[in-house]
Image 1 (cartoon, helix red, strand yellow):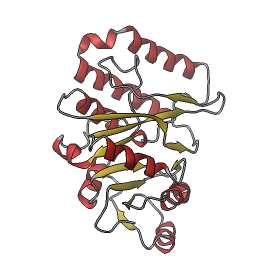
Image 2 (cartoon, one colour):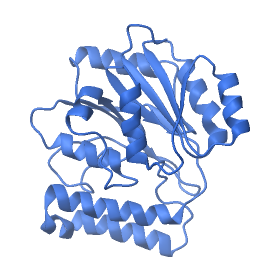
Image 3 (cartoon, one colour):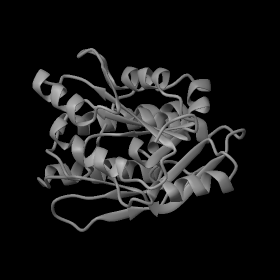
Image 4 (cartoon, one colour):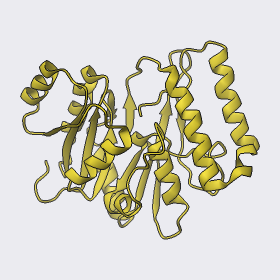
Length: 260
């Protein structure tokens, strides 16, 4: 693992739900293709939990970040600490579905000659309905008409491309990854690889009503910035916002599970 031939830097954003981090780390460490490194960025963690983390994963890089740092800044800090050609962000409770997940990804990277973005199919789950799989699409259609990789767990970035585009934008939270993916996808010079396979699954976690408000806010700002004011009135966008609101009003416990 790691060494001179680091193809992928896996950054575990240990900023909440610290108790779930073993699930994520064990799924990483069992990967059969070891051309990766692991960086753990931890925030607001108890000294006892931090000590245990160092003790259990002494061979991994662990960096503490200040308690007042926001997610875009934390992700940009990660860019300065890693050396992999590609970078993948995971949160505690997110995990690779198979020990061969990275074999599959690395093989695709080689065949496609270093794409700027690798996007997987995403899972949408809640406590009531069966999980749904959303296949990635980077057509010129607006978000809402086609699935775009909104969550950072469903995207692997070429690190050089992220740095060229200025990293993660602090104006967005929790959809910094979506903003960056949208920005990159609209530029013809970049190569995007969309995979129909689901690579990452996740543990359901406690709902956060405030996060839904931030999601809507980010979605509106991103669509306005990259598609213009009139795009906000497209039927697909309005339908997504209305569906979101109705399901909250009806008291459904979970509509989207965001990990940002």
